[in-house]
Length: 362
Image (cartoon, rainbow, N blue to C red; front, side, top):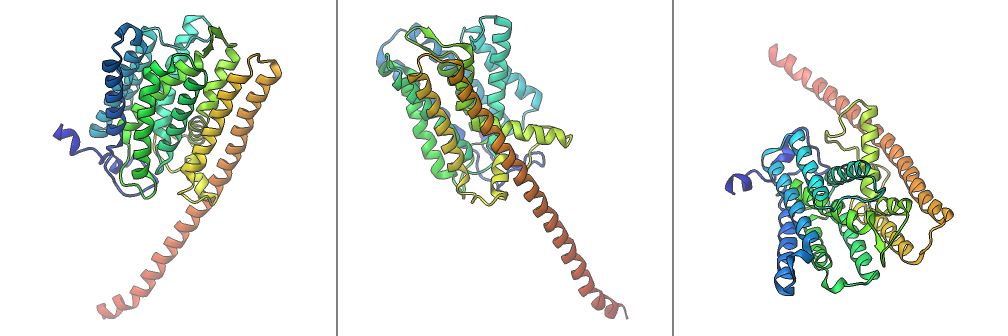
């Protein structure tokens, strides 16, 4: 454990990983997430005296998030190669498929299994990419978990005996405690230990409570169940999409770090850095609440109602992509001005030193 602890927090010194903050802080936030989730789950299982068969899905979830936690832990300590990390993320998805917890959207297993793997790997990477500015990933993850808790309680049933509800409430408490330490100026980071744990957890609850959504045994149409998780994960999806497009257009790898995320471009537009986590958290919360109440009160979805939600997603992507591109132009102009000013300052300094050097040689 000492070999891990002495390296945790140093991976941001690597030139391939770029954070908005320039200082290196301990990346131990993920430990609090995992320990809280693990202890809450064990307390529930030990105190409810239920058959483990009843909580099979929760036990599988615990196994998946544990794997995610150790993938991130190893990456924080030893900087895992991207291929190994990708294979670990694929393993998380394959575990869900193997235990019958994959996405069941079309009823055609090759498509549903591919969609499950794409979802798990995509969410684990998008949460990792979103962790680029103080407080952002914590606030967005907190709102997603809060909306999921709302989803469980609003639709009733045996929520009081649900291990997911119990552990998610505990996890939300750990997120709040982490945010107190992670808001600007951050004292700690979550690191890949936290982001991979969160990615695995959020991917699972996205599948269980939104992709495979049912109420009173009634399954919603595939279009509605596809809209729900996109609405809930709107912020990380937008950030990942914009960054991927921008980097591919520059012929860069999407997996190389940079200060070109939606969060960074919001600050280029003049949004104070302290406000960014709250604004993105509010957007995530509003989209999630709209989804939950839509599923709850629109019991029959017509084509028009589906079109309204699709329009919401398309318009949101369009508006934020426009803001993203505008912030990109402003950021580029600022960087060019900074480089020009720095070059002029160096030239002026050399000119001021030149007479002294001539007098010294004479």
